[in-house]
Structures are given as C-alpha cells and as structure tokens.
Length: 349
Ligand SMILES: [Zn+2]
Image (tube, rainbow, N blue to C red):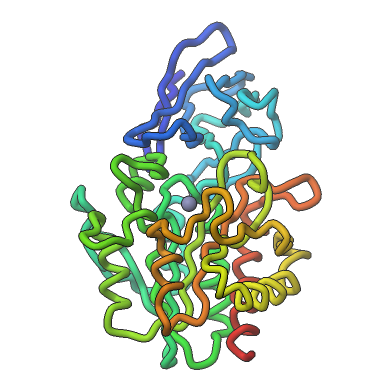
C-alpha cells in the first residue's frame, strides 16, 4: 500500500502505521500562522481493506473526508470518527482513492469546465514559479465585472460557487455586462497543494499594495487600471469550523457603503436556499469588526475604494455547512447560479 501526495493539489506527510491505523500530518509549506487546515492525499493498493486515518490536529470535518477517484468529482466519506480521524472501507476494485479536507476544486476541474462550456482561456501572466495563469472573458456588454477565487489556495468551496456563477451567466447573461474571470489566483499554491493563506511575508489577498509581489494580483490591477469596473467579486472560504465558518457570509467593507451590502444581501437571501445553500445576512462580517479591517489591502478593499465600483465584495463559502444546509458540490454550484441572479437583480435597481 502507498500513501502519497504526488498529484495535483496533494499535501500530506506520512508519520506511521500501526495495523489498520494510519497516522498523518499536513504540511505548512510557507504559511506562517498555525491555522493551516488543508490536507489531501492518495491511497493506492488498499483494495478490500478498512483503514482508519488520523490527522495530528482536529482538521477533519463532520462528514469525514472528501473522496474522489478522478480529482474532479468529490463526495463526503460520511465516516468521521472524531474531529481528527475518519475511516474508509475500500471496495475490492478500488485501487486508487483521493482523500481531502474538503471538496477540492482542482485545476483539472477548471479545465474540464472550460472545455464543456467551450470557453477559451488565455494566459494572463506567469506565476513566480513559471506557470501560465489562465483567465477568460465572456459577455459583450459595456459594464465590466471582475470575478476571482483562490487568492487563498486552500479555499476550494468558493471556486464551486464561481463555477455556478459562470454557468448561469452563460445561460442567462446579466444585460450589458462582460466578465473578466481569474479563477485560480494563487495558481502555484493550488497546483502544488499549499495552504496559501497567511503566506510569508503576506498572501495574495494582502498584496493590493504599491509594489505588489504576486504577478496574478498585478494582472487584476492592470486589467482594472484603464476601465470602469462596475462589480468585483472574490470568492473565498472561511476557517475550519470556528464561529460563522459553517455559514455563507459577505465580508463587508467601509461603514459608509453598508446600504449597498444591505440591498444586495436581501436579494441574495431571496435567490439562495432550496437547491442552493441558504444565505442569511445576519452572519455577514461588518467593517472593522474582528479581523475585518478596512485598512487590510485585500481585493475587496481595493475595489470598494474605487468610485466606479458599484459593488465589491468577498463571499465566504463554508467547507461543510450544517446538517440542514449541507455542502455538496452540486449545492455549491447552485449557490453560484443564485449569486448570478442576485447580481442581475441588483443591476436592475
Ligand atoms: Zn480567503
């Protein structure tokens, strides 16, 4: 049997094995704070066995591990033993299985989405480690919308919502708009399975500064530099199971802009629920509350400061949800569809 992280988005370190008990730890990889929950590993050659996997921290969610056979489609193992462990019974023909902290959104899934929707990406810049970063444009209107996700590499659920937004926009565009989408901002971090959040010396969503260091952030700023930007949305995911982390919420900026967040929030509440996750405005984080400082140089701080921008926000999308509002890949994608409709509603006000 082989346990490894030698694949797209892999991150694990094997500690030891005692019979059917496997002990593992995840790798920090350049993250400087002790909040690095991300892990993803592959097990090969365990067909027919039942194994218990133990992380050395409580980084396992309530529905067990996310499970995949192709790195594109993911579901929950539903076999959490406790906050740090899960079990898995491998079918007799199950030779290779991927496990992860949450439902991963890999570059392979993005590729498969773009092929399916017949969207041709272009290279918007090259990463610090020499990878071509894909971006794409869709729509034909005069109003510019910027969408992004994975400023923090480990935050996959936001990418599913972005996928839903794109699917809905193609089916039912917001009149007179065009989209510029940079779907995987920290492209090195996502591809290599890094945490991404709280990188040393700062992460991609703290790089909206003079002399920014990440080419992907530079590409977003460049794109926006000679255009009016009407809406800008950045999709994220919160920390592992603390406070409002089991919810979907908006990170609001600047006290004087609250009316627009109230208006959009009410529209999003109405569009969400049912086949999509529910969203309740009461979980939003208000400006200058807790970690949400208006002085932090994030994507949404940057665009909220611009007078042309009529709405700029960070949407935080839970990894797990709650038993009555549970995360599945399909429900996250449907949440993106709901988000697109809410933005269309907002544009008509
Ligand atoms: Zn984030």
